[in-house]
Length: 114
Image 1 (tube, rainbow, N blue to C red):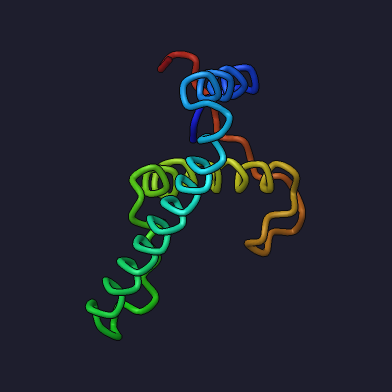
Image 2 (cartoon, one colour):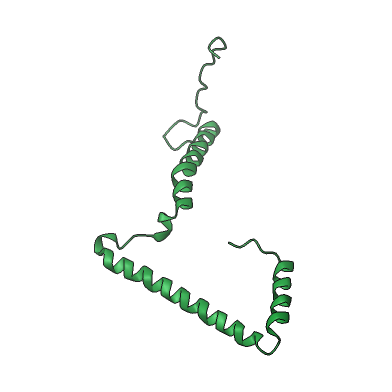
């Protein structure tokens, strides 16, 4: 999610210590943790309210399916992977289509057409 390494986190911690001081820093950290918990609770509540308002016909709705990254991966890359695995199974002779275990016949190659 964030592209922060250990050195950057340490630099932020030292900077926060210098800016806020050692007496206020623990209070600010606990306030930030409390704020993060409240934001997560609100997000979970909003998801639940949305599911409740959509009705029973959409109870199995998965919000990760609506993420554009997962949509593209599922609809563009997975069929390609399935086809590649099918070709590999056919080449190995253990295809699930009931073949007799022999590799699939290779298509004819015409050098004049290429």
